[in-house]
Amino acid sequence: MTSILGLSLLELCYIIASVTFIFGLKMLSSPDKARKGNLIAAYGMGIAIIATILFKEELTPEKWPNYALILAGLVVGTVIGTRMALKVKMTAMPQMVSFFNGMGGACAAVISLVEFDHLMHAGQVELGMMIVIILGLIIGSVSFSGSIIAYGKLEGKIADRALPAGQVINIVLLLAILGLGAFIVWSGSTSPIYIYALLAISLLYGVLFVMPIGGADMPVVISLLNSFTGMAAAFGGFLYDNQAMLTGGILVGSAGTILTVLMCTAMNRSLTNVIIGSFGGNSAAGGESGEEGSIKEITVTDAAILLAYANKVMVVPGYGLAVAQAQHTIHNLEKLLDDKGVEMNYAIHPVAGRMPGHMNVLLAEADVPYPKLLEMEDANEAMASTDVVLVIGANDVVNPAAENDPSSPIYGMPIVKVLEAKNVIVMKRSMGKGYAGIENKLFYHDKNRMLFGDAKDSIEKLISEVKNL
Amino acid sequence: MDNLLSLFYENREFIFLIIVSIFLGIEVISNVPAVLHTPLMSGANAIHGVVIIGSIIIMLEADPTNYFALGLGFLAVVLGTLNVVGGFVVTNRMLEMFKKKEK
Image (cartoon, rainbow over all chains, first blue to last red; front, side, top):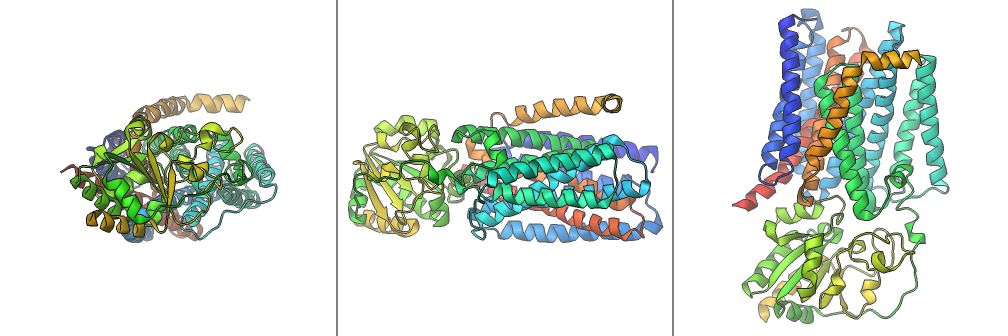
C-alpha cells in the first residue's frame, strides 16, 4: 500500500471521475453540449486510469514487468480501438458499438476469472466477494458473447436462426446458470471445474439469447447488453471497493435499462420477452399472409412530377437508406426541392434502423438540418397536410397492421401514419418482407405506389428528373 | 441468513450508494431526445469501460511470477482499453456531425 497521501489523491481522482461521468451523461442529452459531455467523461476516465496506475500500489522496482505490461496493454488497445473507431462507416455504427460493448463484457469476465483464481489460492472465501465475482462472470460473459453475435448479425455474417424449442433451451440454460452460480457461492467451492463450466454456459446463453432475434429488435438487444456490461462493471467496483467503477457501472446499468424499456415500449414488447429470447424469431408465423389487391408501380418520371408539384413532402427513412448509403443523395433531393419551394421533412420513427437514433446520425452526417428531423408524434400531426410521403427502405415502422390487425406480431406498435397523407411512394429493392418478416398491407393500398430499385439509384434518378422538369 | 444479514450490514453504505446511483442514472437520461439516443448509448458504452480499472488493479497486485494473472490481466487491459478508447472515439465521431451542422 502506498502512503496516505497517495491513497487520498486516488480517492479524490475517483470522485472527480464519477462526477465527470454524471456530467458527461447529462450533457449527452442536449445536442449542443453532447460533444463536450463526451470529452469530459473521457478526461475523467483518463484521470481515473492514470491515478490507479500511479497511486494504487507503491511503485517498486521488482514490479516493473507489471507496469510494462499495463502500458503495453493500454497502447495496444488504444491503437486498435482508435483505428477501428475511425475507420468504421457511419452506417456500420451500431455493430461497432456492440463490438466495443462486448470487449467491456469480456474484460469484466476475465477480471472475475483472475479474482476467482486468487481466492482459490488464498484458501479463505468471503461470501460477499464470491457473490460479486460469480455475478460479474455471468453477466460479463453473457454480454460478451451476446454482443459479438449481435455484431456478426448486423454485419450480415451470421444469419437469424431460431433453434427448435429455443425458448425452452434458453430457460433451461438460464436456470442452469443461476443454479450453478448459487451452488458455487453456497458451497464455497473453489474448484476450477465449476467456474469454467459456469463460464461456458454463460457464453453459450449469450449466443443463443441473441441468435434468434430479428433485426427490428436489435436496437433493444444492444441497449440491453450495454446495460449488462454496466452492471458487470459495477460488480467489479464492489470487488475492489472502487467508487469510480461503481458509479460508472451503475449509471450505465440503470440508464441503459431505462433506454431499453423506452425502446420496448415504442415497439410494444415486454422486457421479459426480450430476456427469454422469444421475440423476432417466430414472428413470421403471426400475421396474415394472404395478399390482397395489387401492387401499383410508379415510374421515376411520375414520381418526380408528384414531388416537384407538391407543397409538403415527408421522407420516412429506414434501414434500407442506411444499406444503400443514400443519406447524402436524399439531402441533395431535399435541397433541390427546397429551391423549387417544396418543403421536405423527415419523419423519424424511434426504432427505425438498427439502433435508436440511427437515422438521425445518418442524416446528420449528410448535413440535413436539425429542425427537418421530426419525431414520430410531430410527423404524424403534420401528415394530414402532407402531399407526398416517400418511404425509403422502411417497412415495419409504416405497417398499418400495427394499428388494425390484432393478430399481427407488431400489433400495438406506434407507426408513422403515412396513409393520412395524400400520396405514398414506397421505395424498395424488391417485394421482400420487412426484417420482422411480416406482410405489409400498405404496399397494396390505393394511395400507395411502389418505386422498385436501389434507394440511392432511384433517388439519383429522381434528382435528374426533377432537374429536367 | 446471519451471513447475509452481516453482509448487508457491512456493505450498507455501498448499498445506499447503489440505490442513489440507480435513480441518478434514470434521472440523468430521462429527457434525452430520440435524436441523441445512438450517441448516448455509445457514450454510456464508453463509460462502462471503467472496468479497465479492475484489470489494472489485477496487474498491479499480481506477483511478477504469476503468469496466469499477468497473462489474463494483460488481456483484460487490452479489452478494457478497446472499450474505453473505441467507445469515446466513436461517440465523438457521431457528435462531430451534429456540431458541424449548427453553424
